[in-house]
View (tube, helix red, strand yellow):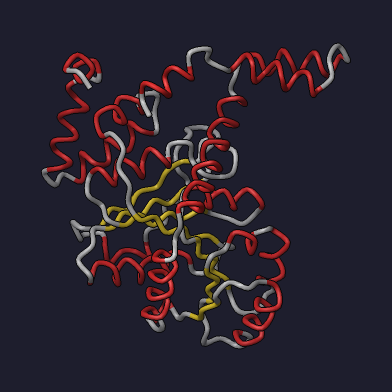
Length: 310
């Protein structure tokens, strides 16, 4: 990168990065706001490519995702790791901001300078993950956060897109209440790397574990997050999964992430509405329209750009 490139990014971004690297949580928050905006590329140009561990947490409302995250953060902080929590929330139809951001369960970590807790608005991105999440993870990696915990809200087919960003993916479920069956119907079990039955001291926990074993071959753990019980076993299972990661799996996650972001950009392309009108009028079939949209969105110089920036 040339000095002109750095100057074009704006001194405020460079100053914020300097402040963030000096320990300013406020500066980190402002940078995360920038990666949620149309200035994302400015931040990315300065931080470059960086990687860190990402754990995905999903499951139905009330399963105890926040409680599980709180005990996991405590466990990894005890190892001395700097941890960031990104809670991907639905967007307000009025402000576009994050609606949930419920940090009550994580109150014990609020004053810990080694923990960052941040809500990210989904902003309508296909699959429930904010379009800015991959850039946010890259920023946090560049700022030496050694673990990012990514939480998605709600359950549905769209939530499985967390698999494109995180590894492993933990699906948190409650005993009874049909959570195991509902998770199977929603497709969550297909992407789960670890299944966690929280509130395992409640009636029905053993039955839920049996139901899950009939539906999935991935490891199933039990947890009592509210009392901090069986956390060591969960951390050990997470670490074992990450040690077994392979290049092929990383490539598959990257492919999913690229396709997800490409779909988001196609949805916002100005040619889409015109093509949709043409299909609705019967002037063109949807197959040809899809081809036109891809061609309209393609950059004739992309191959050269890829070669210049491998």
